[in-house]
Image (cartoon, rainbow, N blue to C red):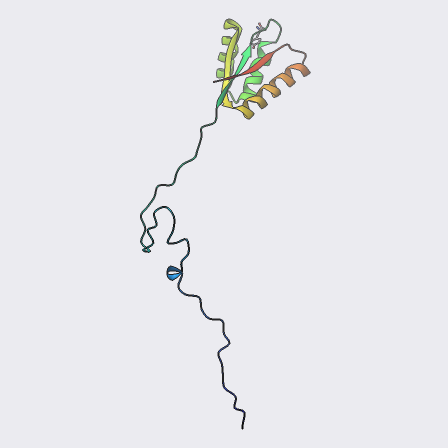
Length: 130
Ligand code: TYC
């Protein structure tokens, strides 16, 4: 009896090529199990958000310049456009400052009402589903 050292390969075996494995490359939409594929248009699950008008109401006391300043500061209007909207509200009683998603519209209403209150102006601003 005698002992003899025999070399053995202890390296990890390489895994089979990805395409030969039975994984999800052969399953699902556009897969037919042959390893060939067709291009499938992905389902688009996008929903347009509801939009909301921010309305401004006329009153007898809020200064015109204050309303113009609010439209410039919170609604991003240029001076001429802000003046046009303010005059429309002054003459018709109500007007649209802009149309936004709910949270943006709500923020603009709050900013406007807070600043008006700080200056003790009765300016009113509200939301309406577009
Ligand atoms: N009517 C106001 C005035 O004569 C001006 C004004 C315009 C007030 C628009 C509010 O939303 C408003 N001073």
